Length: 320
Ligand SMILES: NC(=O)C1=CN([C@@H]2O[C@H](COP(=O)(O)OP(=O)(O)OC[C@H]3O[C@@H](n4cnc5c(N)ncnc54)[C@H](OP(=O)(O)O)[C@@H]3O)[C@@H](O)[C@H]2O)C=CC1
Ligand SMILES: O=C1CO[C@H](CO)[C@@H](O)[C@@H]1O
Image (tube, rainbow, N blue to C red; front, side, top):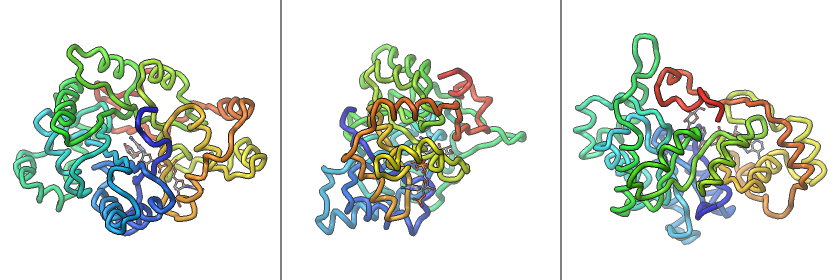
């Protein structure tokens, strides 16, 4: 699994005011891996939790694994470093353990005035979200003109200049990943492909493709997501297996990924859940359990990002 700790706490939808506390609870519970994104607009709050615990002496920076993602409006080579510095500044860190391309699609870059202000970084920190989703008159996203292979070169430069230790991708399908791995002159391979993955979308093909190319997989929405109303936790098969092991349904869903060598990043702002979600190393699912969970697959994708469907790099038009 490379160097990525198997379970991480993710911060999407963790509203400012709650996320700092969640990060502190997580560090006390033994989490090392934190998954963030510029797009979640709470990197500052995640950073505050991390800083507080480092200051207290509860953890050292080098024992943590901090990942964040570069948003689609910053695919242009010249914006990649700006975006990275912006995230580092918000997180108050001097390096990232992992920096991901959030989606393969690049969007129209922000207004030049915004880009100019980025040299000081103050404008973008005080205007989070400005122009994240540039839309046309049909409310579909306006594409940018940068090829993700060019974006990748700028990501590689971040490793060379030591702003980041590893780089990776998210939401790439197997053809996009293959294209990246076959890029002439590739300097660094993606460490991971972060994809939606849970028992209703088991991603068997994409996982075996990534693992066969030595690219780890990180599962997002592992519990069925935080707002789409999918009842994975109430699924009778998951409930039964949980009872048999004396564990919670969430613990079964997390353990399921670990046993497939998939890194998993459940999201939570509830202290008891945060603690529960990392108590997954003291039991083992049987092959029969694993097969039963795999049989729940119904190809149900929650994160479809419909406003980007017309983009040439939309990843979900092919099977995997
Ligand atoms: N790369 C990408 O494009 C994407 C990445 N992601 C990442 O993946 C992360 C996970 O996705 P997310 O939407 O949070 O979905 P999850 O599948 O992790 O579900 C989170 C939901 O489950 C609840 N929950 C957490 N633990 C438990 C528990 N032990 N028992 C019962 N309920 C529980 C949470 O509530 P509570 O807070 O009360 O615990 C929350 O409502 C995101 O935060 C984000 O970082 C997500 C989408 C896209
Ligand atoms: O990271 C993310 C959080 O979830 C959103 C909706 O599912 C995604 O679009 C986004 O990429």
